[in-house]
View (tube, rainbow, N blue to C red):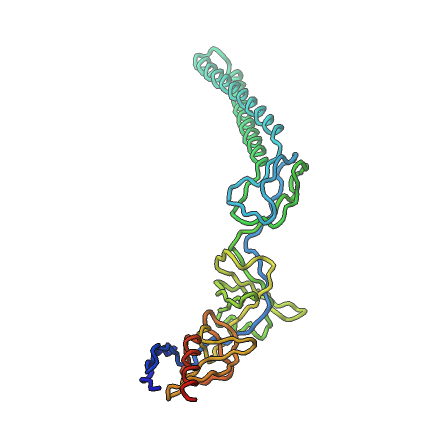
Length: 346
C-alpha cells in the first residue's frame, strides 16, 4: 500500500493520511510535554458549610418535614413546635402595650395641662414636676411593653425552624411528638456542592506546595480529577507525625463527591516531561493495553504499552512508545486496516 506524507499539527501533532485504502486514518504524533511533577497523599472530603440546627424555645414537636438525605431549599420549614403558649404570650404582650400607650397618652395630656396652668401660676412647680415624672414613667412603661411584645413575637417565630441555606440533611436528632428544650440539637445538614478536602502533607512537600500553590483531587471511583480552587496550609506541623494539615477548597460540584469520602490529592511540587496520548487511542483487551503505530513505510503494527495516570482525556505512557512515533487515533478503523495489510502481505 502506498501512503502520502503524514501532515503533523501543532502541539500534539494531529495528522491525516490517505492511500490506496478507501478509508482515511486520523493519527497523532507522540510528543513529550512539560507537565506538573505531583506528590500523592490521601484526603478526606469535608463540607465547607455544615450546621446543626438547635431548638430556641421549649415545647412539643408538631411536625418534622425532612429526613436524612433529603434536599432542603433555603427558607423551607424544617420543623414546627407547638405554638399555642407563645401565641398567648404575644397576645398578652400586645394588650400590655395597648394599655401602656393609653396611659402614656393620658400622662402627655396631663403634663400639657399642668404646663399651661403653671404658666398662669395656678399650680406650684412641684405639681408640674410630678406630672413630668409621671410622663417619664409612662414612657418607660410603654418602651418596656414594646420590648416585651418584640420578645414574644421572636419567641413565637422560633417555633418554626427554617433552613438557613440550601443543603442536604445528614442527621435527624428528634422525632415528632418529642419535647425539646432550648439548645437541644434538631437536625444537621451541609450545603451541597460546598466541599473541601482535608489532608496531612509531609513537611518535605510543603515548600513545593507553597511555591506552586496547585493541586488536583483524584476520585478513586473513575480516576477523574477536580482542580482545587484554594489551598490553606496550617502554620504549624503536627509534632507526632511532622505533617502539615492542609485544606483544599473545591469548585461547586453537584454529584460524585460527598463528605466522608476518601480521595487522592495530587500536589504540584515541580515540573517534568511526560509522554501523553488521548485515551481513545489506547486499546484495552483483558489486561493488555496497546496502540496501533504507523511506521514510515505506512504499515501498521499493534504494540503493547504501559499506561500511567489519566489526566483528563489524556493518559500517560510509561513504556512501549517513543517520542515522535505516529499513533492511530481510531483503534477500530486501524485494526481493520491492520488486518487488511496482514492479509495483503500473505
